[in-house]
Structure formats: C-alpha cells, structure tokens
Length: 115
Length: 115
Image (tube, rainbow over all chains, first blue to last red):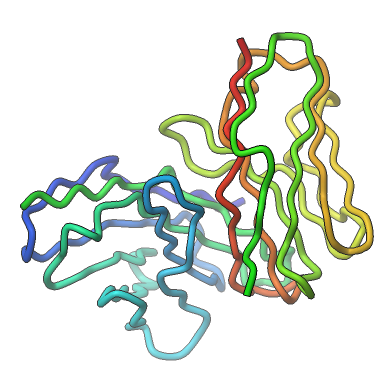
C-alpha cells in the first residue's frame, strides 16, 4: 500500500517569496500524483495532477510541481506567493498498476503567508 | 454548476447516539467517496461507491459505520452508537469516471463532534 509523507506540517513565508511544499511517496511503481488545496472553511479542490508525460506539471494559481521518479517525490512550488495562498495543501498518490485508483493522502501542509 | 454538497455542515451529538451524514454528488458522477479527516491528520479513506454498489469498504473503521447510495446519487454515512473518537470532519467527494485516476470534487464536509 502507498504511503505519502508531507514532511512539513507548517510552512510560514512572507508575501512575494518563493515556496516549496514537499511530498514523498513510498512506492516507485506506476503512480498518479495530485495536489489539492483546502482554503479555510471550504472543501478540497484540485491544484494540479500528474498522470503521464512531462514531469513538470502546471496548475492553477501559478503553482507547479515536478514528478521525480528516482526520488519518489512530487514537490509543489510557486515562485511568488500571495496572502490568498494561505491554505492547507494535500498531496495524494494513487497506484497506476490497475488497482482501484483510490488515492492515499498525506497529512497536509499548512501554508501561512505573512504580509 | 452545483458542486458536491453535504449536510449538516456541523453536528454535535452525545456519545452513544446514532448520526446520519448526507452527501449530494455532482450530477452524472458515478463514483462517490467518503473520507474522514481528524484534526491534524490527512484524509482517511472510508468507503467508495461505483454507482450504487460499494466495491471497496475496506476503510470503514468498525461495524458501527455503514453507508449506502441510492439512485446513483445521494449517499448517507451512518455512524451508530457514536464514540468520542468519531469526532472529525467527514468529507465526501465524487468523480465522473470510476476505476480511473479522475479528479475528485470535494464537498465542504460535515464537522461531527461527539460529546
């Protein structure tokens, strides 16, 4: 079974600074990778996903993530954050090997953007 | 269009009582998922519906938990004889195509507090 590790429970950053939120997963077999964002008092919504093809994936709101198979990582980055990016970010991984595709979620990283 | 809706948004109950949580998925979405999110934890998978059947109930934590779905639409998650450890946010998600790595659309959740 997959496990997903988001090492940072909280990442404080100043507005307009770059940010990287880390995600590592356990299995190196074929995987599908997702980042979801949860704004305060709202449901999770998809930021971006990797299914195949280019390892650099661009998502909404200026976020991007890079799939690194050898390091089993899918870190999320943004070159310049805004106050409105303050939210909880979840990495999720599902097996692409013909299973149920039900994703395993990480514990989440709280991004706190200070003015 | 309308997203995934859940009701109630908040539920406070006494230990030992039964509760019923409701999820209305996006129209036309055949897959429906229930997750539990405890404070400071990631999303814990509970159960998955494909149409009205549940091929994967592996995440239900005990026989006090049950779920059903009717008309390939509304789903209810029932927790009998609630315990304090059941306190959490219960999230519902739906997706268009079951059995594939399709984007999940989440509802805002039901916050359950068991006193």
